Image (cartoon, rainbow, N blue to C red):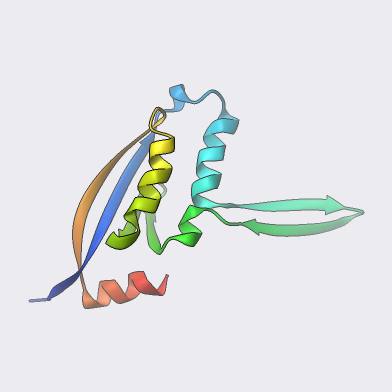
Length: 109
């Protein structure tokens, strides 16, 4: 039997599209969370910039477009962000235990 050693949190969220004022506002939520790639064309040259999002700053694994696995000690950073959007985004937290191998994978990200 594998020994479960590390506490983590699985966050599942869903957006309420009808509560967003526009697609631009909805995109702002996803960009702030996940970051985005910006391509600028200037004088026939293309410049690509990777803009970081919150998940680039917080050790976590993106399980799906709306599901994140986060080390327990960093969960408040994600929760603070989600609370800023509480009128437009629903979320649920699930406490999970990771075995040594899963813990190592999460820490490598």
